[in-house]
Image (tube, rainbow, N blue to C red; front, side, top):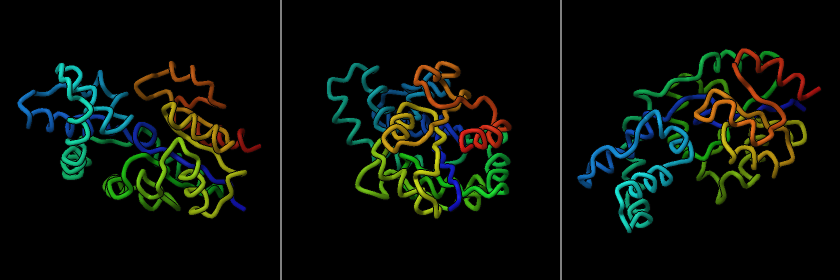
Length: 222
């Protein structure tokens, strides 16, 4: 059975932070609060999802009803994001080439993301990489999401692999905990908002450049 490499999407394959934060700021502007988040300084929060961005913005505005507002604006945020999903988003340098190299070496590849599946599929299509993955599991594909290991297992199965011969590439503690729950090696990228600080999560490996990924995967699967 093929060895399978599973990728997170936001903050791992692509820098989606600017488009995500633009969607949150659109919600804040609708309520007359202006732009409450910064695309650079708040990128890490963007990679933790829509509700996290909304909570941060409304807490900065001093709103006592932060949680209620975050829930009320979650769907409008997704709608705005879906309409502008790939205006500023870019693949990280070498990402597509690295995935292609893994596939050429005989590995199956999949995406497991906490972005809603429909949006994730729209994004990978817009980025031109849909054909590089054998399966895609989103936040709403199953009743549970990462760090529950079930979506990860479903991504591996969808790619035709087995969890015992797989590993996860990600960028946050959610990915680290998912890999731990699934009992698989975890690789965390250092080109996200935390930089080398992500080493604090003690993954099995760190990835500084996508050009290093094929050799790194070969070592972890040895």
